[in-house]
Image (cartoon, rainbow, N blue to C red):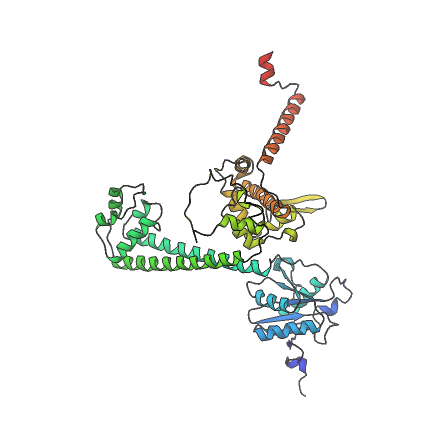
Length: 480
């Protein structure tokens, strides 16, 4: 007897191949949940894989509601056309590595709303760990409105984000080759990397180039010292005496070459990022609404410039957001990186509380039977939340109200808790400034500090009264 079309898994003219269940009934999960409440009847579920994906629609949309296709572009387009033919308007999928990105783009091109969810938020049906059942389970959860789409900014912001993340990878790889150079110098007992602060600076690169070129005289190498170096020429000469083994020289030469190659690629990435940022429509015209005065100019130290010296990062950030976010303590060098991660449309989060919750900067509760069983920070990895934590961590010696708050919280919560609490405040300020288009006002901190002092004084008076004492200010006591 000839095998049927469903048994052979032949290709249907209207879409991808018909998928078979390798275990359990052919109806899968959908046949047992016919009476479930449906909030999104036009929902589909997609199980993402590196070579093939499984797609499930409602049982009444097609004779074969579960299908599979390969991940080639033509197959993905055919899959999307089949979903459109089934009347699908939204499709949910797991955030599996980067394999979901081509599927997401194809669905958007065909007018289907893609919903990328965290795999931890949808556990599979016990005992049915197959792709055939997984896509059906995703479709069921999505149709019942139980899946929430992850945040993904608009396409132009995603392009900037991709280059910013790539630039970060290039910086990390360049730093690895700096470590290789330091290791080679240490193996040759050349200790000048401990004498100068940065071997990739003007003096360091000049000495490294001379060593690679064959110069071994420590006196001549020390004369390459820049006058601004704090170490004396004699100290540098002593640190440049070593054994100069050939294998370590080769490692030093190759690492130096690779470091310079990565620096060129970083510079090229900076150029492309600047072009993409400049292409955005500005929210404010600096000619009509000039950039506010830089209140932090006196406190800011001169730092090594990266990228194009003609690129005005503060001015471009002001045009992008409409407010000067660089005045927020700790965010001076992170504004454009934050733009690539969260964009500038804060309407995705109804309130600041929603924003900091998405960042993972607030505590979570586990309540059962009216009792709090657990309270603490959620274990989540959010790049934007990490940036806010980095901004808070940099304020340890900052003489601003936020810096004072960080040090005060360290005495109460410890370093980790204080960093998170400060990052929470910085994130709220960021959200409020961007959404309400207001400038940073440090005078508000003085009002909050005054209110905090009043609460502290009231608490002390109450504690003294409970013990039969009365607090008398020093001024009144001296007058009496």
